[in-house]
Length: 195
Image (tube, rainbow, N blue to C red; front, side):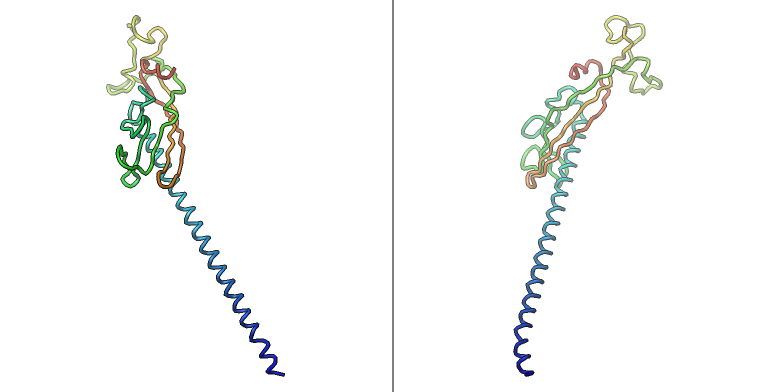
């Protein structure tokens, strides 16, 4: 009788071993898939972060020049391909005008002036020889031919601009849109683009 029991149990061990092997294989495949998914998530986050940084850099580039005030439709100093388009190489962090760029940023819509507030002469800070407001002051005795002399407005105005940059990654397809508002003091003569 003992020999019969051992003979019937030999197949059960093989069956348990095969089930354990299948379970271990499923665990390994699951771990591999989870690792691959996490790697893709981190790669997408990095591409989005790079695109966000490039969009912010493009806005800072536009803000560093007065072109967006005088000609909003052509506000990028060195465009690539089309007006208001900036191409960036992420490795060097510089703009490129030829070759393949990793990220392309478009100012769409063009920079827009959303508000103008004339600065009154009485609100100017003219103390000190290097005061920025000195150029905005309209003389008290000048009544004819000087803008704002009668109304009390100075020769400058505070403006609010809205700049939108949309960046697309060539290889990754990452797409980011950043909108930033900025206040700029400009000459009253330049406020025509704000009306």
